[in-house]
Length: 122
Image 1 (cartoon, rainbow, N blue to C red):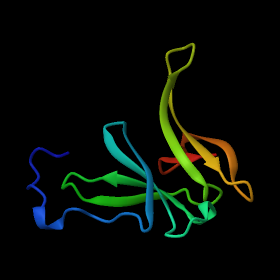
Image 2 (image 1 turned 90 degrees about the vertical axis):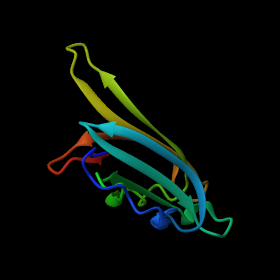
Image 3 (image 1 turned 120 degrees about the vertical axis):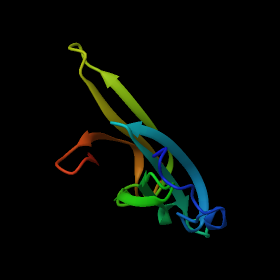
Image 4 (image 1 turned 120 degrees about the horizontal axis):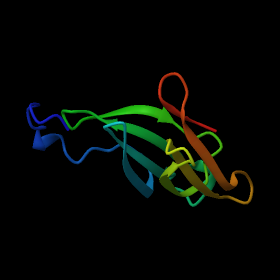
């Protein structure tokens, strides 16, 4: 967070960033930028109706949608951010998403941070 930014308005909290039942949240930092990954399910018991969204935490404390990873991850049951160094000391950021839906998305999808705008790619 920007130490010179004015503090966020306490009346603006709590913020709703996902509709339905919360499944999980994962916070991490990439290149000095704070991120919040939020997985939520629909208000029904159908796990294939969920969302998975990555938010950037702005210096003001506000959240900005950075990437929607919902497609193919409708049954997301959890996620883990990983930073792995290769043999040359070069590090890469990964996002492992565990899906649990027998009728659709199932298994683990692993994304790597990259791309032209800074995003996770499958």
